[in-house]
Length: 80
Image (cartoon, rainbow, N blue to C red; front, side):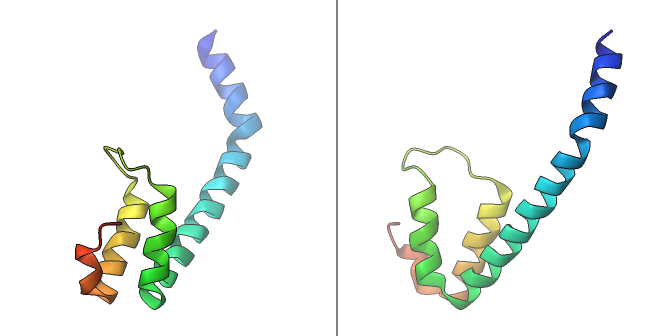
């Protein structure tokens, strides 16, 4: 029963999930590019997205932080 439900669900929403994954991938790629060109502004933006008590951040955001660090190493010591 579950397998039949899962297959139906996959058929119905699979295209939607794939579209969202592509959309998110494009946004992450853009954010990485902006992190290199505008590291200080990107750090400010990411700081507004990430809570102070966060224990884990997604790999995509870590890539943005890495791009910021490479672009402007001074920002590594920034408390944001």
